[in-house]
Length: 418
Image (cartoon, rainbow, N blue to C red; front, top):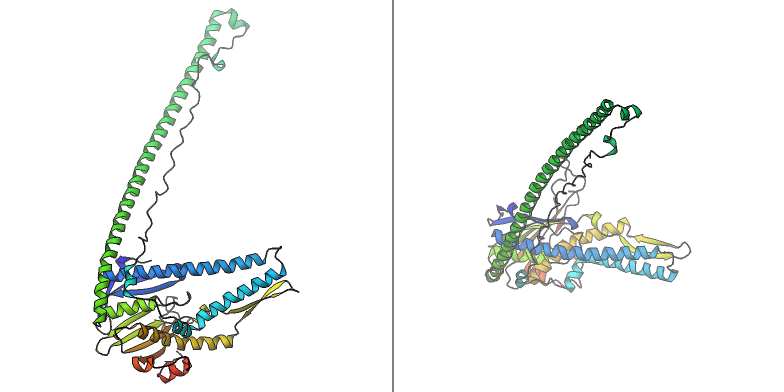
């Protein structure tokens, strides 16, 4: 999700003027700034980033659904012990896959390089804004049911004549006048009531028609705006398809903006667990051919801990085994060492034109205990710094080397007390 009106111009420390657009994806709690040298291409990259996050969300949802399905099946009374044992094995397999994905970052990357090329940016999804639907319209007023019109022949208006009235004409005529007066009064009241009810209904109908007209005009305008926005969206995407070719050529010439756009997408497409922020800011020192990367590291609490699920037949219960705190802390420490090394590997392996000679990596982390004056989380602190030179790094055989040793030999430091 992004708002094109939120684009702002900024200057990087190296002096590059860029356009920055914040992009968020609430379903994954993801957020990052997308930048480029033009507003149009910044938006285009934001579209691409949204597409990546949407795919990641669908994969995560499918995995969660699979877990939930296994847990629900295990609770069914007709499920036999052997089936429950199989469910435990399947849950263990999913848990191990999550652990491997989260804690074997460098090994995973060495086995499969990022699948990014400039032409990937020529693909884009359909217009993400759905066609607006007609908003709820006001309910039409219910036509009132009017009381029946009084008739002179109704029993209520017939004179009630006793023996005396029947014999004495003057008495009979007096009773008839009283009955007629009663009728005229009732009829007048009926006419007044009917008039008020009809007027009220006419007023309600007039108001309803006005509200409907406003709603229809609003819907018509919304659809017109949507059609215009959709047309603008596709027109801008097609323009950016042409820009991609220009970017490809500029990258081969080591143009700083093209270098940043390229490696921004290389890192964006890298396959990390959904719980990892994958949020970063980049700069490029053209003279030194150095890529500067400020990277947001994943918090410890967001990492998986479940390692095994076993079924105890005697208790008819599932027993979950989680990583103990000491092992979790060790794995997390290894993770912090591997993230920059994986980043170096991905950048250098995808740098087919040798635009980058060195990478300065600074890792940031939100410290949970720190809060600003307004009660919100403070800015992340830099807890990690390491620099890599192309040639020495590319000569490292990670199948024979430990990531922690490599990190230290490169002069990397972790500020554990920050």
